[in-house]
Image (tube, rainbow, N blue to C red; front, top):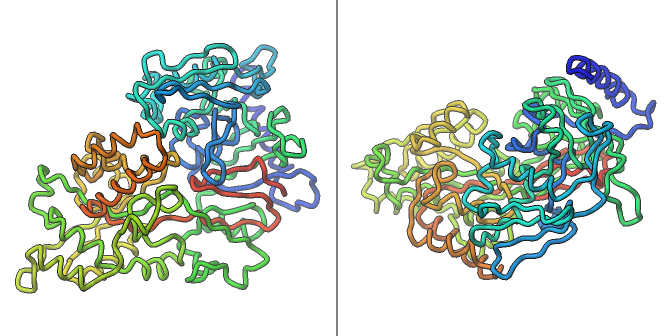
Length: 542
């Protein structure tokens, strides 16, 4: 089938399926289709470019990884049945399932999907680090894998060899970047592989009309079964729409045309959720509100490299002023009135709630203490006679109210903050170039390990992730030690010690530890989230 005919055929199939899976009277169809909307669209279905949530969600339905995280963030087997680790923690040997097949695709002989082997794992991982691929995920293996460190020992055994021990490696392998792809499909479609997804996952791509909709159908040959022996997934398919208006999305959800909404837009959160974070009574029975810790921290970052001109003449070069900012505003009031209690006030470290090393009784952050804040400002050499110069805080439009709240509270303790609202692309550019002195940011976990947050402050890391240009030799030593520490308890203590060190030096102002907040149609069952906010639809029932 030539390319033009294929595209035309795909669109026709899409139209037909949308009619079958459509959002009209569902009583007329026995098909169990899960509908959701993706406001930002989907940029690619190539796992090598699974760098944001919208792409990761769709990739997770179509592809599989060697291991995966469960709803408790534990690592569990997926395409790999089990694995062995060498005594020196450098060699990981994965023993693969022998009942996994790629989806049927024209790339294979006769259009029939073939069995996945260890060669596919080796190919997929090499492809990530191949400069020709230009994968946004190449960093996960950089300076970590030995030369020849990806090896298929036989059809069912894959071996990975590290240069040195790196305990978070299993978390990296669970990322969507590490999804297993077939060489035949990559080579057949070339740059168009982004729109010809072919994996081993519970759903297969049927059609994708960019800007309109994507339809995925149940993979009848999926290997996984439930405890009763029933083949997963339970639902017949997924339809993803691409309406770019959150208001339209909310209206569709109200009308029962979407199974769920992820997150709640500020424009209508007060309509649905009380200030205490509970579903308002008028919505009870019509909506299920699900909240769950999310490995994301919202923070204010402060550039602290005193060799930079922008830092030399700024009052933020003083640790006391940075500490004063941390203690000078009420996080709890901010969360209550501006966030409807969605999230946890960040009064511990930079590592968020939901990770094993998080312990607010061990890592002590900043509670609201205006008296202490005023004293720190005074100790830094500022007073009514010598007021502190104004400092500009850069933020993006959706967080302007939060920035203004913080600025107003800090004004009462003698810290003058000028809020400047700029576009996200400009803020990202300025923070990457170390041009933003004081800025609003967020850090979402790539994998469930505190190292992913503490690497943010390792001086040998560039920006990103070290946007603050923090440098502390004692911290660096602890960080390097933690990477090779095989005892989990000892490693957790090292993480906590580093986290406390950062909070004391205050290159960041933690705001809140985020929560997944989903509005769910009551007809949806077994729809669970984990701390990575991954969209898991294998077990969903309608």
